[in-house]
Image (cartoon, rainbow, N blue to C red; front, side, top):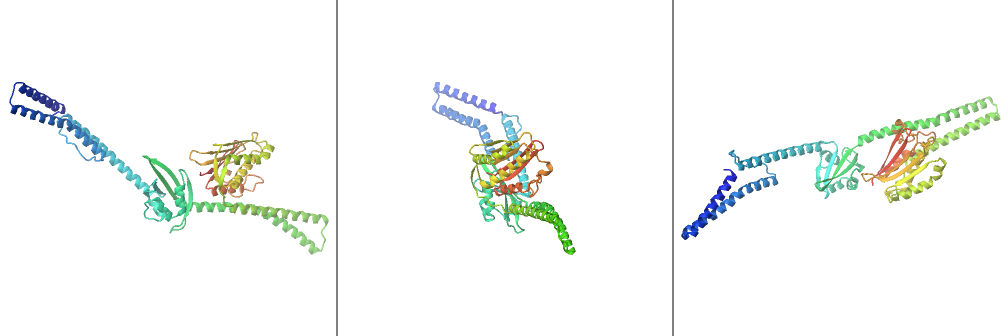
Length: 447
């Protein structure tokens, strides 16, 4: 029966009963008849309320099923064309769609969980209280563990790794060396902070880059050997040749028992002076190499960057004026503070400024800019930009190799020293250049 028809029929029947009760009371009907009609009317009211609430009960049951993720319930359908039947059909359709969506979400979750588990990169996610959500197979293998419940348990594996995970912020990375049954592993630790449904989550990725480091180390050694061989041979070859020539002439004089003339003695003296000069150059070269290999550990302190740049500008003022260079220094915000070794950072900046001055020797417009600011990921950046001739693309990949230089009188260790100093500060140095427009060196500090 249609819900509206049933409801209307019950209301009409109740109205008729109330009308008859009024009629009996007005015509002095007996107590029995009056009481009977009162009971009948009360029963009709109860049934009417129950009938009216029946649809609300079904809606409530439908909402409870959704709330409890119970999509397997089915409302009976009689296909009699009533509104109740239509309501049940709609309920069943909605529950079926929700059940399908739930199954799809579960399938996607299992898929991504399988992908997560089979990645070669170690991945760990944990909440703000330190409870681990996911720990994939690669992470277990790298850390040589079976399971972790809280991230603090990693301290028993490696204290440096534990400190890095808690200390790094979004975008931060650090290289950690850990002992493993298969040998020493170099782990690149990268951290991302996420907020999902008002819950803070930290995602940590661990990548073993030992083989890549060994490959790069071998490549670096090969490049270094090439440069060292080239530089040493350039110094040794003329020394050996000149010494051999002088030795031969002196031996000839001794064999012939002929005294050397004044001119010959002057030639010998000039030759010995040349040998001395080239030997000093070789000694200086070796000294530069030693300085490259013995960079002191940074003594960290608070550095006010605006004050530091003002001091550098004053220090280099004479060179700026003599080379007709216009300088621009900006620090944003004005009270920007860096935690590092001021002497080493000064050494890096002075080297970059000298490089900029050299690059602008033949430039018409000579502008050197130094900008310090905080980027969108919270890292402190110092950029040194010149309007010089730029660096050729082929040289860009080699400028940080020890003893490689594009200058006629350069030692080739300045940028190598700068890169090592930045690495000691857990930072990095990058370069971008365009021929004819200038070069920018970017110092990146992980705040």
